[in-house]
Length: 289
Image (cartoon, rainbow, N blue to C red):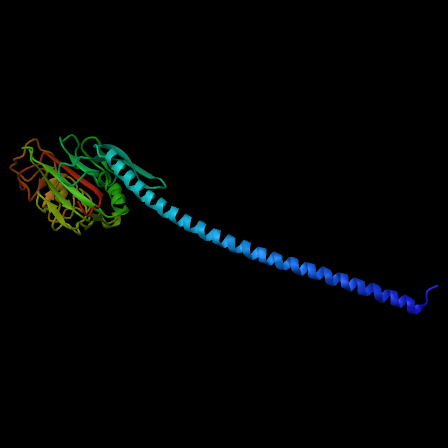
């Protein structure tokens, strides 16, 4: 039978052995932790270096991709203009929600102002009566392939999308064609009677018959026709007292007239000569046009 001191001694030895074992295990664990720290530090450094290199490669690729995107965008824009350079009727979308309408696109470029013009007024043979109501001039009338008025509401939507220029083409019965270009054409809303807000600078060969037209409201018979211009000269227009140009007047089959009825551009052939054909066109502004 063991005595009490002997038992205590054995327990003390057991505790010492356990302590030594624990200390040994701690040393091993500490060593492993240090090794792991070194390994992790190396791995982290290597990962950091890899990320830096990858970021640099991505940046270069992005630059190349961006430039390629720009080049492709320019190419597509040029190609689209080539495809729509031929005269014809195209569907235009000016509001991604629901507004889309068809327009006549004039692609001819012999006038020196380039192509891709959207036509909103066209006279050529007298097949369409332009002595119309306010509603007709607001929403449009005629045949897009022939004589027509696109509509003030559609024209306003086109002009509201970005800065536009206005090109007017005039032809007399001798086959002579002249032009008037205004580089910043803007209209007010219907609530302000589609007043001409801006025309910008004039250039061309027809003379500036719209020199004093900024601020003029659109007029038809029965609607703001204070001076009876629409009744007297027939057709809607931006009248005041009354006009220095009127391209929506009654069509005449010859140029020389004894009255002021007809299609007129005051600075070209005067008010007693009715023009054979006209086109009023707009497109997004080009500084190099």
